[in-house]
Length: 179
Image (cartoon, rainbow, N blue to C red; front, side):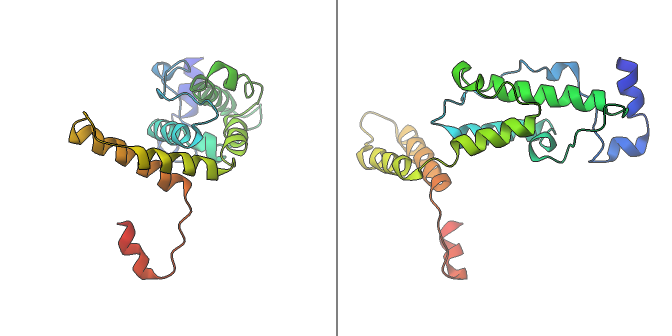
């Protein structure tokens, strides 16, 4: 089997093409913990950001975006596509709580899982989450925390707000506020 995968990409042009599926390393197995933030249904924005960083770092984002299209089963690239798709599916499912992951385990592609998770959790009403974060920021006090710890808490909540709020710019000058 290893020789089949190697022969599929022995052409030097194929190895440099972003659209040719490259073989995976055994060390990139599906049981790899990709984030300490498992998807619970309430933390989609943070979870999806961590997952995308990991998967992009592995060069497998095409399986989430749909660029890596399933070849015909008779294609020499099919086995590699199937192995890599299943690996990305495992990464996604293993980064969810058991209860959450069970809802998505019967989809056939990583893109299907990614799209359905996005549809399920990203379109929730943001108003309550924004209200909750603003309440936390309002009540946040340095207390016994170091300045660094306090500042890190502020930054974390500000970034969460940035991810949730849709800010509309009225003119090019507004960009100065977001640098």
